[in-house]
Length: 82
Image (cartoon, rainbow, N blue to C red):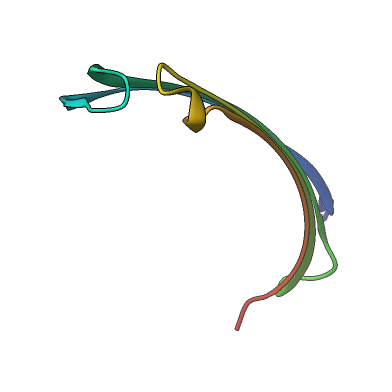
């Protein structure tokens, strides 16, 4: 029996959010656009234990400039299923 112990997981997301009411500081309705990308490398040690390392990039733009940001996150996980 052949088993794969390693796999890559990719994710790309986009959202466009319009707020219903005017934002006082910009005198118009706020609009946010968010893009994100993640890549995960997962390694299975056995049926119940695996490790994951994930990189996440987020780019958030808004017509409310104080809400603009970019984010880079690297996480490491060890998962045990009972």
